Amino acid sequence: LRGVSWFLASLVIGVGLDVIQKQLGKDLTGEEITFFRFLLGAVTLLPFLVWQWCKQGFSLTPYWKIHVFRGLLLFVGLVLWCYGLLLVPISTAIVLNYSIPFFTLVLSIPILKESVNRDRWLTTIIGFIGVLVVLNPQDVSFDKRSCIILISSLLFALLDVFNKKYVCKESMINMLFYTAFFFFLLSAYPAIKHYSFAFTNNISLLITLGIGANLIFYCLLKAFCYMDASALAPF
Image 1 (tube, rainbow, N blue to C red):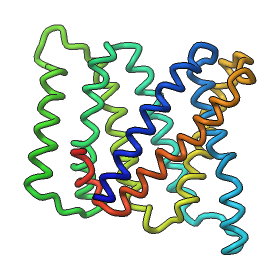
Image 2: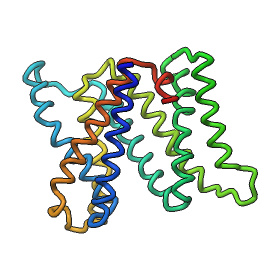
Image 3: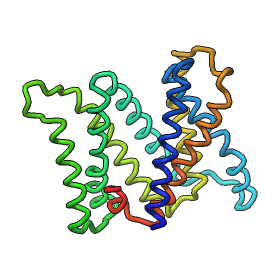
Image 4: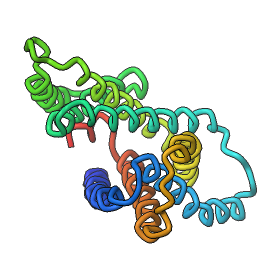
């Protein structure tokens, strides 16, 4: 119950952030919104990181390569998702995004060594059948570009699996901070290239977005502390 509650909390916060991003989109480019979301997310975590250093002593994470990989997965996944939204109807993209649970379940077996029971397989496969019905690859009008959304879903699922794998090995603050830090580094060039100089008029919303991004990830990691990734996937 605690695991599911944390997971559902992450979804609720995510909906709120979608509304904020939609509002910010009136003045800022998508590249800017994404950049400031993770830049301010990292900045708001700095006091907690310093507090951790004061308590445990200064030390860089031994898992920095994993954090770079996680940041890269998140960055490429979001880029493909945003690009896919330009190519296919948004209703199709949203349904195709429901393939994440199936990929999570499959990847959790070799990477996390989780034991997936019949109920988990059944609920996840039923959902994936719905994805195939929408995708309908045998239809002559099938748009192969829809596969871009599926690739982004695969990357998001792989990210969830690695989050689950390292949430018990790494501190929560490090998991949150390094994700935001490496993502904002990767997104810096696109943001500068599409800079609109309108961020000062929306600074309060951007700060809220950065804090909210941390809260989503915190709730998701807490959920992984209580449940298997394959058990959360159907939710």
